[in-house]
Figure 1 (tube, rainbow, N blue to C red):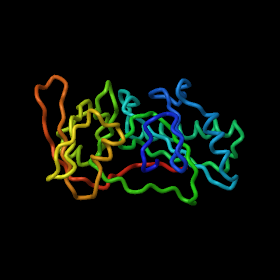
Figure 2 (cartoon, rainbow, N blue to C red):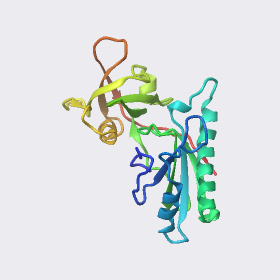
Figure 3 (spheres, rainbow, N blue to C red):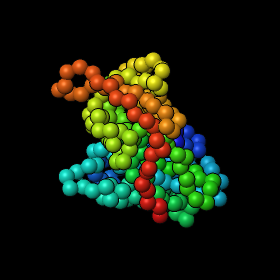
Length: 228
């Protein structure tokens, strides 16, 4: 996941991952939607020589007063370590498990950690090309949950957290595509594309009358991470 983003707390997709969610601002598992036993059983199906990588993330709800980006990155790592500890308690060899903090990841709004099998000695992510928006499905709408630092969206400044995406124009010549009936993964797919191409977004803002449009050039996004 990792390039195919995870949008649920219990998603079984071989070679992508299985996530658990945490209560905002903490390393306390959300027990109602997190099943560590299921993850342990899933990983046990792979050969004992298979390495396991656990990625930790933070979300917008983790942004408490006076919290810095470094604090959030550390929280991401702590979540990965927490899931590693839980899996070790369930019999998974800790020497097989590596943890990494990817901070925040465009397209996912979960405060989560994801475990997945890794067949490479060094973990790697395929480049993510987009405009730097983390989106969340809120009350039937697709809403901007975070604008990533140094991204095209942040540099442009037109979009803000809480803005509701109405439609997407995948290129300058394409037609507008309403997103109301689309899943979050599908909307993210429309916004992403080839580097140096243009994508248009039509959006609404609470308290502001009418809709606005913005056109941004997609770039390879710079994601910060800590590896342990």
